[in-house]
Amino acid sequence: MLLLALGCGLPAAGAPREASAQSLPGDEGRVRFQEGRGHFDQRRFAEALEAFEASLRALPSPNTRMYIGRSLRELGRTAEAFTALEEAAREALDRARVEPRYARTAETARTEASALRALLAVLTVQVPEPVTGLSLTLNGASLELSRVNTEVPLRPGVVTLEARAPGFRPWQATHTLEAGQGARLEVRLVPEASGPALPPPPPPVVLLQPQGPRGMPPPVPPPPPSNTLRIVGFVTMGVGLVAGLGGVLAGLSAQSVDQDLTNLCPTRCPRALIAEDLSLGESRATLSTAGFITAGALVGVGLIMVLAAPGGSPRPVVVYTPELARVTPWVDPAGGAGVGLRGRF
Image (cartoon, rainbow, N blue to C red; front, side, top):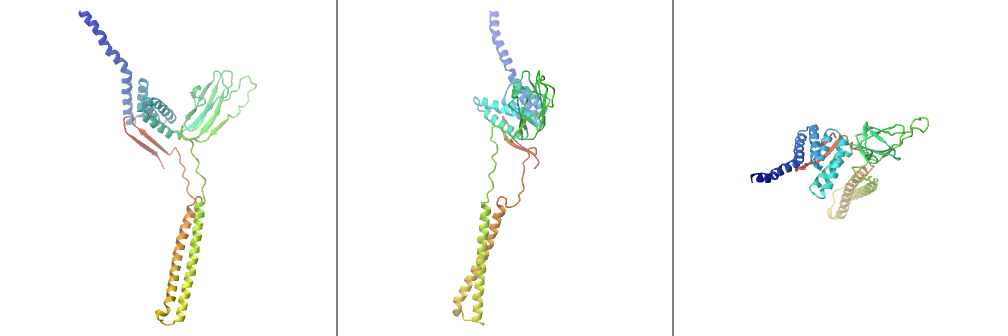
C-alpha cells in the first residue's frame, strides 16, 4: 500500500516540475526584457541591446523587437534600427488581428521607423540574369540574395557593391548616396571566356526621386503661385488715387467758394445772407478731407497686397535638413507616450 501510494504520487510530483521547465524560456524572456528596460532607462544602450536580444530569443515579441530598434537608433546604427522597427511594426500588425493590444505597438514602431527614413539612403540591387553561385557584398558585408529586388536601407555616403560567381569576372560598382535619396543598381557579370579583359563599363545607376516613409505617398508639389492678390492690390491703389484726385478737386472747390465769399463781403457779412454759400463750402471741405483719408487708406492697403503677393518681394527659403533635427515619438507598452525633438535650428 505504501509503494502504491508513493507510485501514485510520483506523477503528481513530476508534473509541476515539467510545467515549470516548460515556462522557463518565457520567464527568462520577461526577466531579460525588464533588465533591458532598466539599462535603456539608464542610457546604457549597448547593455540594453544585449538584454533585449536575449529576451527576443527566449520569448519573441514585437515590443522587444521595437526596443531593439530603439537601442540601435541610440547607438547610431540607424539603418539597422530602421529595419528592426519595420519588422516590429509588421509583427505587431499580424498579432493585432488576434491580440488587439499590439495595434498600439504597430503604430508606434511604424512612426519611429518613418522618422528614421529621412536620415537614410535606399539602394535596390537588381540582377537581370540569374547566375549560379552568385555572391554579393555590400560595403564589405555579405548581402543575402533574398534582399535582391528589395529596398536596402543604408547610411548616406559611399556605397560599394561587389559580385562574384564561378565562371564570371569579379564585378564592382561604387556610388555616393545622400540622405533621403534612393538608387537602383543592376549587376551585370561578364563571362571569363568572353575574350580579352576590357575595362568594365560604368554600372547603370538609376537615381530615384526622394520618397517619404514607406507606405506613404510622395509629397505633392505646391500649386503655382497666383497673381490674383497682386492684381487686387493694384486695383485698390488705383481706386485710392481716384479718391485722392476727388479730394483735391473738392478742396479746390471749397477754396473757390471761400474766395467768392471774401470778395463778396470784405468785412463781416450777415450769416443769413451767406448761409447757403457757407454750407456749400463746408460740405466740399468735408468731402475733400474724406477723399484724402480714403485715398491714403486704399493706397496703403493696395501696396500691402502687392508686396504680400507671391513673388511680390524676396522671401527667405527655409530648407529642412534631416541631419539637423530628429523628431522621435515614443510609446511605452507599459503605458505613457510622448515626442522627443533633438537637433539644432
